[in-house]
Image (tube, rainbow, N blue to C red; front, side, top):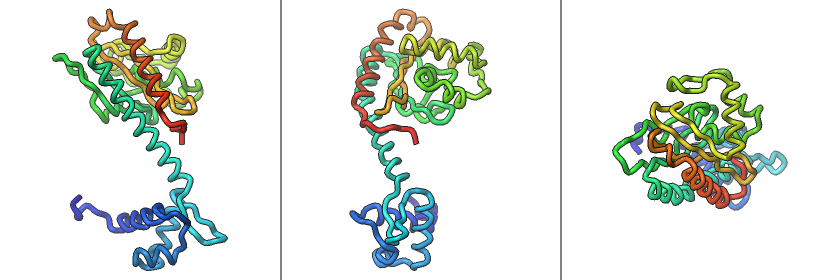
Length: 256
């Protein structure tokens, strides 16, 4: 990375963070100062700031610093998402090879789904979604698959009152969205027909973390005319793949 874009105080704070996090025991202010050869006042401010953020824990009685619960939780979630992507890759490859259609993997972030991996169809047609793109929960089979297995009050809070119309077929009211969610919950997979992109039908299934919370979803996307003959077979294959991914994940929760 070019040094002209570095922020020196942040870089120094990261030195402090890396040192404390790498120690097998809690450390004192003096130990950090001596190890990093930084001014005592500067190190103290960094330690206190990182402690206030929950990344460090400060034992006031012993006056020692160690890794905080917030950092441990983030590390567990990172492990969970790494395992998700790694395991899902194999399943997505098999689905893409078997169906020759587009396979998507997405996670929930606030009121949207974020695409974290995609296998493009081995055909000429390409769809709008790209890795890193964000789409609304209410207009995607991915979002509906996740929402269907969340508590109703959590779904209402996430979706809110705004329903952005992506196409003329997009669900634009809470009552209809709730009905779609209930139908998804009953059959175990979501169907979205032209609600997020004209002429495209998607089938989505949830992936759960170790506590049974829907952490992600996997979907198969195809043009409307091709999907007509694929629904049942694709839904069954997706559910099997999602179950195997879920089983392989570490038994931790993604919820902070």
